[in-house]
Image 1 (spheres, protein in one colour):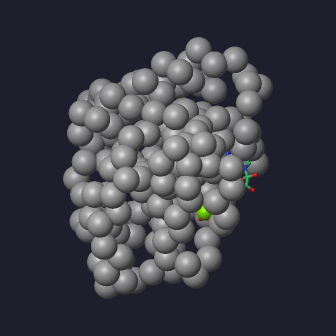
Image 2 (cartoon, rainbow, N blue to C red):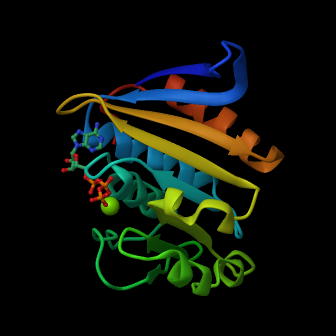
Length: 177
Ligand SMILES: Nc1ncnc2c1ncn2[C@@H]1O[C@H](COP(=O)(O)OP(=O)(O)OP(=O)(O)O)[C@@H](O)[C@H]1O
Ligand SMILES: [Mg+2]
C-alpha cells in the first residue's frame, strides 16, 4: 500500500490534510477499512464515493471487521439502512437508488447522535445534506486490481483519523490479514 500526504488543488497548491492510498488488491482495501473500523468512535461519519465497483462495499466490510462485526455487510439492496452489531453498531447506507427527497428523509442526524458509526456509499448524491464534519473517501478505478483512495478529512477528529491510518498503513507489512 503506497500512501502519500497532500493532494493538488486545481490551482496547483496542496491540500495538506488529504491522504492518497493506492490499493492493489481487495484484501488491501479491506485492511485499510479494518484500520478505520479499529479507530472508529460513536458518532463518526464516513462518506464513500466513487463509481460502481470502485470498492466502497469492500472498504465497508473492512470497517465492519475493525468494529468486531462478524457478518459481512452485503452489496446494495433496497434496504435503506442496515445495522450491524459489534464493539459498537455500524449503520451502513447506500444512496445509489435514492432521490434527494428520500435522502433528506433518512434522518442522518439521528444515526450520528446514536451509539454507532455511519458509513454511507454513494454519499456524493447527498450533496449539502451531509454534516460538514466527516471523513470523505473518494475511490477510483485504476485497473483490474488497482484502486485509488483519497481521504479528505473535514474537522480535527477526521484529520486525526486520517493521519493515524496513514501511519498504520505505512508500517503494515503486505499480506497481514
Ligand atoms: N484493490 C481493490 N480494492 C477493492 N476492490 C477491488 C480491488 N481490486 C479488485 N476489486 C474488486 O472490485 C469489486 C469492488 O466491489 P464493491 O462492491 O466493493 O464496489 P462498490 O464501490 O461498493 O460498488 P457499488 O457502487 O456497486 O456499490 C469487487 O469485486 C472486488 O473484488
Ligand atoms: Mg457497494
